[in-house]
Amino acid sequence: MKIYLVGGAVRDQIMGLSVKDKDYVVVGSTFEEMIKLGYKPVGKDFPVFLHPKTHHEYALARIERKVSKGYKGFKVYASKEVTLEEDLKRRDLTINAIAKDAKGQFIDPFHGIEDIKNKVLRHVSAAFVEDPIRVLRIARFSARFYQFKIHPKTAAILKQIVKNKEIEAVASERIWHELFVGFSEKKSYLMFEVLHKCGALQLLLPEMNYVKHKHSIRKSFEYALKAKYSPEVKAALFFMYLYPLKTNSKLQEEIYTKLSVPNEVKKLTKKTISNLSDLKQFKKLKPRQILDLIYKMDLFRSPDTLLDVMKIFEAFICSQPAQLKAASITLKSLNKYLKHLNKLNLSSISQNKRGLDIKDAIYEARLNLTTKLI
Image (cartoon, rainbow, N blue to C red; front, top):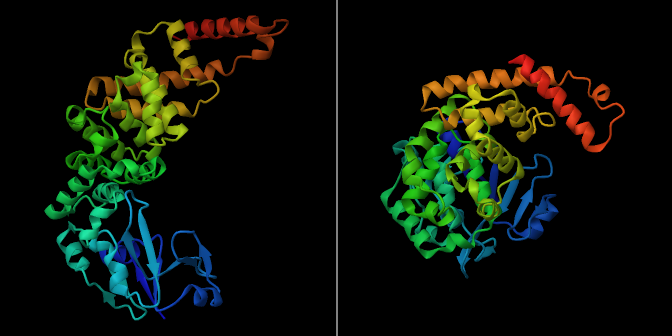
């Protein structure tokens, strides 16, 4: 029984990056032996275990064979006879197919270290074409390792995977997971560029005119990078470019369902796009319009969303300096109105009133105060 550190941990060590998660492959062992040694089995599809003390993942060396369509159409075979090289060969990229033994020596049968040096993303074997999820993985790796270039042969295989349309069989939750990881990377816009070039973006989001918005998306995400936006805010920013679909709520929901978009991202996108016009011309709004905007954005109940909405708005209009400057003033103004409006004694206003009369009285009191604040 031999144990090797594998995958991203080895790659990041070689690149001088901080290592977050450590995964190990076990060669020459069995399920029964791992149980006897105290390892805890996890998952149903793969022979993966957790170390009894460190809780790192240890997987028996395995090979995979394609038996049906889709990313789940694989049969896994793990035994004492499976070699380290066979296990590494099933991986996606050469930079992820490097192992490190207990003595600190690297085992690199597919020249991943050389590809790290030359900054190349290259597939390990012809079996790469069998797994459609790898299209999304390569796209997000391009966003993370933005100095790297995809090898021409690998790029051709990505197009072949898309042509096979197996990506349509990938679960929406898995698609969103890969996209969300990409949103957390520095150069998120490169993920969309890769997906566009291989045809996957057109397959996943035919509603998007990427060619039209390409340069705007890049500028918006460069702005988001400087401002250190969260992945959720960056995701909502991306969906801003799917509109004018704002007029078709049914189509909106179909897109969100197709990609398993979380509610937080959906709400941020909807709040921003539905109030985009008022945010752009905030200086021209009258007191009632300002108050209605606050109501529509639900800022009395969720004041914390204002900052995220304004982040999305600013990144969306970042190519227009005049509007960008005005956006900063809009944020300060809305915060000022909220601060004063929240000081109103609502109990006193609603005293001796019922139902709609209470709402009307509160609204009128807020409107009067908004008028005075302008």
